[in-house]
Length: 79
Image (cartoon, rainbow, N blue to C red):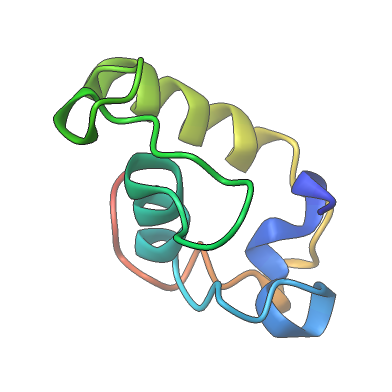
């Protein structure tokens, strides 16, 4: 999927993303039954919390979703 629109949620082709928490959870825990693995060391992945936070910050920096449609901005979560 297009990662520059992940914070657009269902309107931009990411129906399982409704908040920044969903982005964090997807990266940390992965998605069963898909090619998305877990990246968190707590889930036997390769990234620690700081690395996941850095990745989230990067994803937020490349978003091309209009502010009014950006579900990551309204969640109140921290990446």
